[in-house]
Length: 240
Image (cartoon, rainbow, N blue to C red; front, side, top):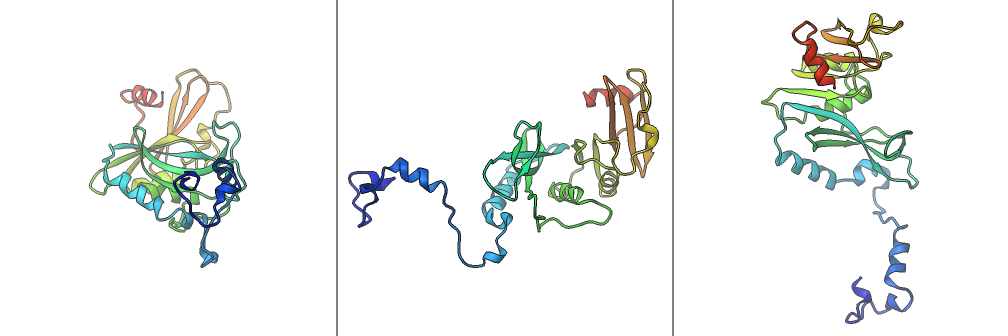
């Protein structure tokens, strides 16, 4: 913008003679400048470095998370052309770049960028876990080592294999789950109308599967709860 200020007379071929500053900025929006070297190794993830790692490191340096944290997905709005963006109907932000985040009370402790066409190279594949579960564990293992944590998530992430894996690695987990999730017990898949507040559970691979009847059936997984008369109300309150 300094080129459009009267006291500047550089460069020699002064652009201000040909267009206004606003016009130049409108055109510049459609240009992307990148190095011509090593283009074969340039991906969505490498282009975000080193800024992405720096923000993540600073976020973890200046905050101590509580014992209860959550994993969720975010969308950074973008409607331009990109093979990496996601389109999700009925979302507040239906199109953009997807980001998995590890949060505590509104604070983003860590995050992971996703691509619709590429796998993130920093995520290690773990046997018996799907790729989404591997991404969840990649975020969780960045938590401080000298504390215990309970991880809360929604049915996009929850499955019995992941909860069993987290339990084996000393993390508690709780979250809603889809009834078509792997290993979810058939006995908890509602096939007839049940009374309101009906609560039942089945343990599979040391993971508690729960069915609770509210206005509709609610299915959950947990490794930090039990079902009995003392804890039934606690489960209901936490779900609400």
